[in-house]
Each structure stands twice: as C-alpha cells, then as structure tokens.
Image (cartoon, rainbow, N blue to C red; front, side, top):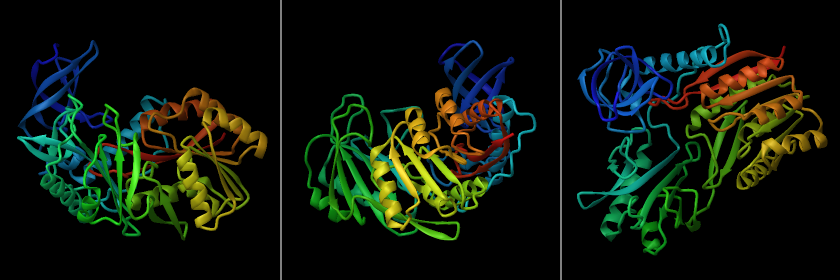
Length: 445
C-alpha cells in the first residue's frame, strides 16, 4: 500500500475517533469521512505494516442509514448518522475499550445518557479567519488542512445568537479591509474569533485574536452584539488562542454562568482561557452523575484532582464534609476560589499544583480522603499519577473521562491495585461528533 493510492472500499464499522473501518484483501484501512455501509473511493494518506489511513474522496454508494446533513460542518461529522445510531455506537465503543484495552470481562457499562439538545448546544466556539478568492472568510479549517479555511454562514452546533455575532464580526472586518493571518507565510492580522455564551445567564462574550498591530477596536466593539468584548494580540507562529496579551474592550473579562446541581443553583465566573464543559445542559447531567456515584453522606473528605474552576468540587461540597481541589492552571484556581466565595461555600479549598507532586503534601496536611474525583485531560493519567491516587487510600474513586481508550488502561491499573470497577455511565456531551464522555466508579474490593 502506498501513500496516494486510491481504493474502492466498503466500510464495515466505526473506530474510536470516528473513522470508518474497511478491509482491502484483509488489510485494515481506517477511512475518514465514511460511515458503516458506505461504498467509497478513498485516497491513502498514511500506510503502515498493520493498517492504513485514508480519506473518502467520493461516496460511490451511500449507506442505507445515511441522512442528509443539516449544513457542512467539519466539527459535526456524525450528523449523517441518525441520532439513535450515534448513541448506540458510543455506548458500544466504551464497552469495547474496556474489554479490549482494559481487559474487563463483561464491564458494567450502563445505558448512555442522551443529550438534552442534539443541535445548537455548544457554549464556546472558536472560529478561524482565512481568505478565499480574495475575500475574507470566517469559519473552520477544512478537513485535513491547516491552511484552508471554509466560510461558515450557519453553524448547526451554535445558537442563533452566536451565529448572529459571528456574521456581524465578519461583515465588519470585511468592510474594514482587514487581512487574515496566513498560516504558511505568517503574515496578516486577523486570526480567530472566540465566542462564549452563558446558556443560563444569557451573556455573550466575543474575543478577537489577532497578530501584533492595531485596528479600530472601539468600532469593532460597537459592531458586535456581545455583553463583553476582548482583544488578544499574539506573536505566536502557531495558531493558538491561549498565547498573547488580552485587553478588555467592554464589559467583564469573565463570563458568568449558572448550573443546576443537586437541587441547588451554582453561579460560576469563567476566565477567558479557563476550561469549562462546552455543553452546559449536559455538564449538569455529567456532574450530577459524578455526585451520585460518589455516594456522599455529609461526612466525607473529597480530593478533587484536576479541579479546574471548581465546578465538580463545588457541587460535591454541597454533600461532603470537606472538598480539597488541586489544579495546575493558576488562573483556574483563582476562579475556583472566587466561585466558592460567590456561592457562600466555605468547605471547599483549592490549591495550585501538579497532581504528580501535590497529592503527597495534601495528604500530609489534610489526611487521607474518603473519595477521589478525577477529571483529567483526554490523555488520561500517567502511571505516576495512578500511584499518587492509590496513596490517597480512598474508598471510592469517581473518574470523569473524555476518552474511553485512556480510561480503560487507567481503570485496569486501579483494578490490579485492589479496586473494583463498579459502574461506567456514558454521557453524550457532544452530539453529531464521535467524542464520548463517561463517568466511572471504582471502589475498594
């Protein structure tokens, strides 16, 4: 098999991550842009001894299950699958990862929790500026390309208000004649537009990311229908919205949001670069499940590792004796402390530190915990972090995972050390995409 070769393939199933799985004379080919039942013409992009990767360039014969997409959207590749089939695939992939990677026989996977809203659910969108045929465009990277940007006029994962804001920003920038950043030549001004929406508070925030330079910031602020407007200037060569200096042009730097958890309403302030689940309605479901599986009675000490802005920890504090959180990003820790104060919560404390080195000092200061809550990045836990978690000596571990293929080996490591995998509940945080979130409970055997 050579790179660039074109094959006609029939797709049998879906792999984790969303690629279709086909076979060519017994050789496995992962096909991006293809669904089970499709007959496609695919071009090989990578070839290895055991498998190849390819991209569908033509649907020769569509699967009987295929449905028409609402609108072109590289961030919603599964919108061609009926929603019930999406749910079934995700639940199946969680079970498969635990069996195949985690070596769990008949893992305790519960039925997946469907999304409250399968469309227009995202509370944060990052759009990229580009040029097409001499005209400024604002949208998403074309699949497989870091240079080409496809214009978006209708984002089916964003609310109507976010769509209106994006179009207003694009129209103003076009009228001003501003140039887009060239990702190959590293010239040009406009880079990204980041929009955040408080789904419960109704607040809208727009952050324009540009290269070094100047523009009519006051006029831009007046042109976009947002409660707060920020401007980030960066000299970074790579496309990133995290580097640079951010200036507040209007409103408050932090977005306010509310969550209904355990019968209480939590009010949260979120800094521009802080992580917050991009589906507010399903974040409420996810964290409520985590609290349910934690089995709190009001007497427990909880360690919240990877605590972020404190969302899970503050929710658990409503039913725990004490919550202690560790988070690497100092600005997120400041948000967590402020959010505890904002909600009148005095039994939750948050500390800046790396989980690998901060757990032992926390145990020395506070003692062992009854419950550990983990919400790590999608890469999962390193072996060193797993060892630190074991040193806590908790009766129960609640693991919130955005990647079942890293949850599975971590769960196996914990199980081999004396914990039992009691429950895994998939949650569809990201409809129309292959991403899967789940909450697992492990308890001392």
